[in-house]
Image 1 (cartoon, helix red, strand yellow):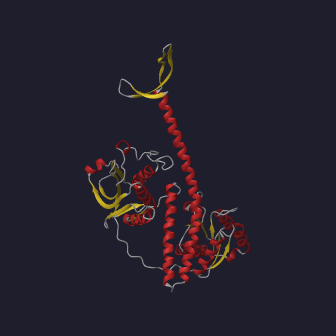
Image 2 (spheres, one colour):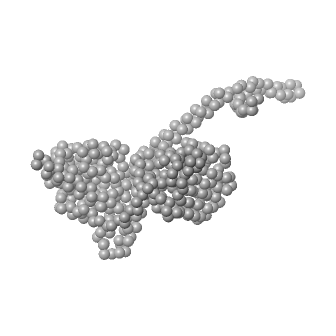
Image 3 (cartoon, rainbow, N blue to C red):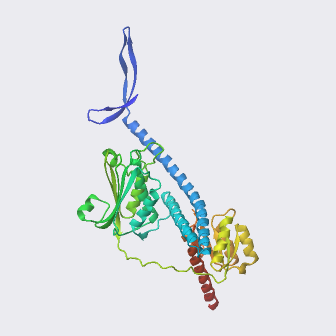
Amino acid sequence: MEYRVLDNTGNFRWVKTSSRPIITADGPRGLRGILTDINKEKHERIEKEKLFLQIQENLKLEAIGTLAGGIAHDFNNILSAIIGFSEITKMNNAENGGVCGNMDRVLKAAERARGLVRQILTFSKKSQSNNELVEPKVLIREGIELLSGSIPKTIKIVEEISENAGFILVDPSQFSQIFVNLCTNAYYAMKENGGVLKISLDSIAVHSDTSKSLSDLHEGPYVRLRIKDSGCGIPQENLSKIFEPFFTTKPVGEGTGLGLSVIHGLIRSMGGAITAESTVGYGSEFTVYFPQRDHEIPEKETSIASPSGNGEHILIVDDEEMLAFLGKELLISLGYSATSSTSGEDCLRKFREKPNRYDAVITDQTMPEMTGIQLAARIMAIRPDIPVIICTGYSETLDERKASEMHIAAFLYKPYRRDILAIALRDVLDKAVLDASINRHE
C-alpha cells in the first residue's frame, strides 16, 4: 500500500508498506512488514504524470488548431456565398424595402458569423491580432446578444454599462473571447440553480496605492469590466490557482483548464490586469482593467458608392463553382467584363491563349493541383505587368506580407464585401496604368 503519513516536522510524506499477518495458534495477532520512505520517487512520478497530461493537452490543442483552420476555410467560403448573393439580391431589389431589409439582416448575421470564425482562429492561435480603437460597450452588447440565445432563462442578465466608459486599444475578437469566456464560466457556476449574471462597465483612475495591489497596472485611467455571478463560488484554496494552465475543477471532459489562463495572457498583452474575488455559496466576481485610450469622436460615416470599372476584363478563378459564378456576377455589377474559371489549369490555359485580353486576375489561394500563388507565378511569368489579387478563407502558408514579397497586387480575406472588392480592384488597376505610363516615359 502507498499512503501519506505526518512526520515529526509536521509535513506529509509518502510511504510504502509491504506486510503480512502474524498467525499464531490462537489466530491472527498482528502485522509484520517494512515501511519504506518513497517521498522523492512519488513526487517525481506525480510530476511525470502532470507532464504527460500537459503533453496530451498540447497535442489536443494542436489538433484543435488544425481543425479550426480547416473549418475557417470552408466556413468562410460558405459565408462568401451568403454575403455575395445577399448583396446582389439587395442591389437588384433596391426599390423593394422588404427585400432590402431582410438582406440587411442576413448580412448582419453573416458579419457575426465571420467574427465567430475569427474568434476560433484567435483561440487556436491561427490568426494575428489586429488592434483597433473601440468602445467596449459596443462589443459587450453584441456579446450579450450572442449569449442570450444560449444562456437559460433561469439566469437573469443585469447590465450596468456606462455610456462614457471610454475607448480601449484591442483586437475586437480577442476582447469578445475574454468577455464570452468569463460569462460562460459565470453561467457554468449557476447552471444548476439559476441566478443573476451582472455585467458592469465603467472607467476608473488607478493611483499609486491602487497599483500596488494590482502589480500589472501603472497609474492612469482604465476601463473596468466586471462579471459577477451568484453561483456556487470558488474555494479560497483554489482561487490563487485559477489562472494557472491546466487547472480546472470541472469534471473530466467538461474543461481543459485553459480558458482563464489564455484570457489572463491576452489581458496582460493588452497592458491590463484581471482579478478574482469569490465566496463559497455566494458567487464570484472577475474584474478586468483595460488601459483607457484618448480618442476623437468619429464623424458619422456617409455612404460612398463603390468605385466602378470602366469595362476592364477580369479573369477570376475559384475551385468552388458557386463562388466562381458569384465573383463573375459581382464584377459585372461593378462595371467590369469578366471571365470565370473553376481550376488553376483552366485559368492558365485561358490566359495563355489570350494574355493581353485581361487587365487583372483574381484567384483563390487554396485549390487542388495548383494553388493561387503557383498560378500567379505562372501568369506573371507570361505577363509581368498583370496585377494579380489572391483571396483566401484561411491559409497557413500565405499572408499579406508574404503575398507582397511575391509581388501580388492585393490580398483579400474571405468573406469580403462587394465594396472591399471594388476598392481593391480599382486600386490595383489604377496602379498598373500608372506604372505602365512611368515605364513608357523612362
